[in-house]
Length: 248
Ligand SMILES: NC(=O)c1ccc[n+]([C@@H]2O[C@H](COP(=O)([O-])OP(=O)(O)OC[C@H]3O[C@@H](n4cnc5c(N)ncnc54)[C@H](O)[C@@H]3O)[C@@H](O)[C@H]2O)c1
Image (cartoon, rainbow, N blue to C red; front, side):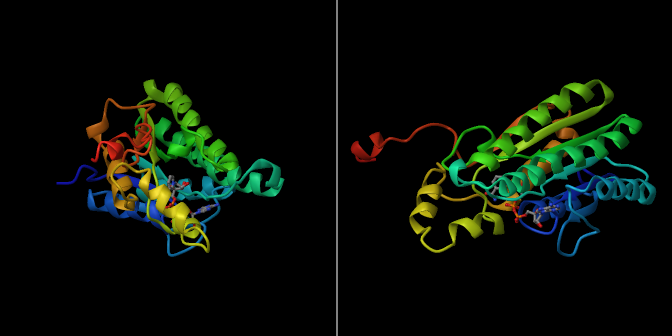
C-alpha cells in the first residue's frame, strides 16, 4: 500500500531533474500523476507564466480525474548574476518563471483544493531563497519570494484543509546545475560548491522527491507553512578549517 494510493497529483517541471523524480516517486507511492512542462514528453505542454494555460490544465485534471490531492511545483530556471551586469529581461525571465509561475500554479491548485476542502501543495524553492550567494540576485530573490509565498498561502488556507510547504534543496545533480558547473572554466567553482555540502557530494533528484512525497502525504498531516531544507548540510554553518588544523 502506497502513501498516495487513490490520490491525484500534478507535477510541474515534470520533464527533467527534480520534477521528473517527483513524478516518478509520487507514482511509486500510488498517485495518479499528471505532468506539466514547457518541453518534453509530459501530459500538458505549457509555460507556467501563462495563466490561461495553467487554468486550463487544472480544469482538465479536474474533469478527467475529479480530484486534486497534491501538487509538486518544480518548474524553474537558473539565472541572474551581479546586478550591474544584469539585463532587465533576464531579471524578468527568472522572476517570472520561478515566482510568478509558482503563484499561478498555486493559485489554480488552491481554487480546486478549496472546493474540495483538502490538498497539499509542495513548492520547490532553494537554500538560495534562505541565504544569499554570490551573483544570486534574480534567482535568490525569486526563491526567497517562493518561501514567503508558501508561508503566506499556508496561513490563508490552513483552516480550509490545505497544507502548503516548500523544499529548499542544496545543489542537486540535474541538468539545471550541470549547465552551470560543467561549463568551461567552472571546475574550481564546482569543486568548491560540492565541498560546501557537509556530506561531500551534490544531492540526487530522488532525495528531493522523497521529501516531496513525505510533504504531499498524510505522514506530514501536521506540517504546513514550512520550508524544509534538504541540502546535505550546506546551510548548517561555517567550516573554517579547525578540524583540518587538528589533523581530522
Ligand atoms: N538543481 C539544483 O541544484 C536546485 C537547487 C535548488 C532548487 N532547485 C529548483 O528545483 C526546481 C527544478 O530544477 P531542476 O534542477 O530539476 O532543473 P531542470 O532544468 O532539470 O528542470 C526544470 C524543469 O522546469 C521546466 N521549466 C522551465 N521553465 C518552465 C516554464 N516557463 N514553464 C514550464 N516548465 C518550465 C524545464 O523545462 C525543466 O524540465 C527549480 O525550481 C530549481 O530552481 C534546483
